[in-house]
Length: 386
Ligand code: SOE
Image 1: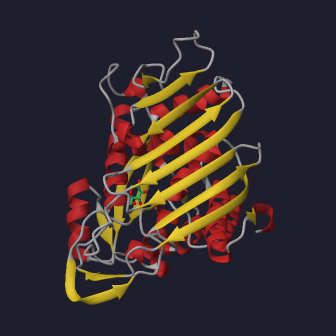
Image 2: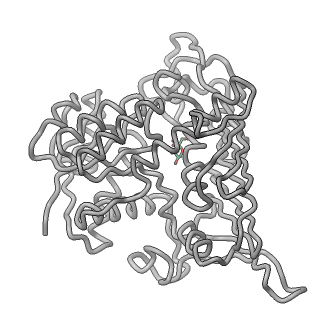
């Protein structure tokens, strides 16, 4: 079995989700490549050391350049904040590494374009991790749409709603700083919805956007503060420089009309990543908080017996399920990351592409940027004019 050594950059929420997935992938799936958790990289030595020991990373390093420059590293896993994505991904691809990159792709369209060009020239596998594409229930929706079960699509409705920033005392973590996050709910949450909309409905041609900021300054964070995990330093306040909510309406190239709602102030919604797709022959609806289920309305059902039904996507016929448990023994958030690692290693072994890749990422960045530009300028943006 071919072994491939991984260097991971970042050890917070995504570092944990990725480490778990690299370990579980060979335990539940037959792989041609064995992933080796070789070296973990982060800025703070003590938490990095604890992270490496907990997950079994063999070495640690505080300078990502030294990880990228190592000849014995085959894959670079970028699980760091997006302000680091461009520099690390370009360097890793130029050093001949395959790149597994956490979303969102970059800070700007220009950065994303350079990452895509470098990836295409490198001939290496480049993957942008939008984990929700690899939910069995989302794959079921994709298969039903591709088989024509929904017919001509009229509408997409995406709503990615959380509420972890509603408390004005929640500290100013990096997700709230433009120079580190690029933007707020738009890049963090609408990026996921845009990826799912492109995957399930198609490309977007026109965008209008509107944003809001509800809390303009917050307590400075302590060193342990992170997404969903507060902790103030007591050293004063800092300015929030991103939007708290970002809504868009779009026209798809195929004529469908769509809407996107992204907010971290939707009190009561924890990780409510919802989409609804309405077509001529039927409709589907998915919500990550009930991630094993797909709602389906079949417009060809018997008159008087029509209604949305709940499909539990845990049968052997549903993608990935045979490698886990019997029907009804549901899977969770972390399993999508395992599926991503399995497909990423499969793409390397077969010399194939995996989607979403950096070309998908450029499309996504264009739509993200169009939404924010529309909100700023108060006009609809035609995407090909970007
Ligand atoms: C915070 O909003 C966050 O961690 C996102 O950054 C992730 O992409 C999402 O999957 C969960 O919530």
